[in-house]
Length: 303
Image 1: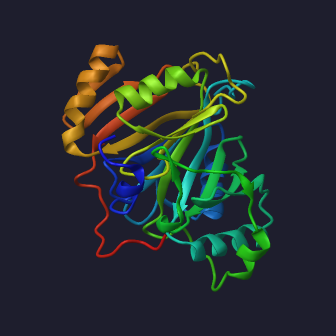
Image 2 (image 1 turned 30 degrees about the horizontal axis):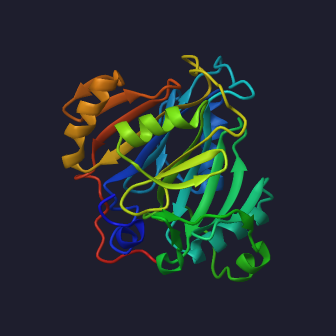
């Protein structure tokens, strides 16, 4: 990297990083119930639904696309696919409100962690697709070693978080985004070759059995782990779970990514709107320019 992650982090945020997550696409067996779950639990708006496909997100952006397929086969234990989709809230106060909302509605929470760079709550939708709801800590609190951000997994003080809640949760704020996607894959080095070498993400942190990939100094827009999926092969076509996700890229990055993807045989389609690649586990990755999709902001969001 030409500059340290620490230096980049003071100047860039996930909303404006050169590479950031756009829409995540899931194939689900019960479209109506899963749509309602993300609407009620995460606070996404149902932007459109025709009985076969639903688009959910904020007022301005589609964050989640659900494809209904009652006959889709669930992912087998140890298979590759989604570990979780992580919805980033703009500040600690919003995370406190969401946590109170989850507790009041008796949602089943599977974990709560302090990662030093962020505070996170974990759960799964009724079909087993992992979800993270999180807020970043102020960037001046992030710590670095050898150009990598330090991340830990410590118990989150949920009681303190709840005590700080002031107000009522009213749904995902308009500046809520998918901060990162965490994948379950078959081999870390193969994933690094695709997401690091071809797509151009930096390795922001190496963790036991996992790698974290960042852009613009962010702690990670992508993560891969082989904790329960080492040796997993490609996902079968038509399987339930993660189908695809979108990366919004600075226009200047599209051409070099295209060249690297072509050389590696990973480019499957190209159009005026961007590129389509397929990772080693048959997960579709679409790149399109983020020039027209960056939120109009007059100030940085609270950390």
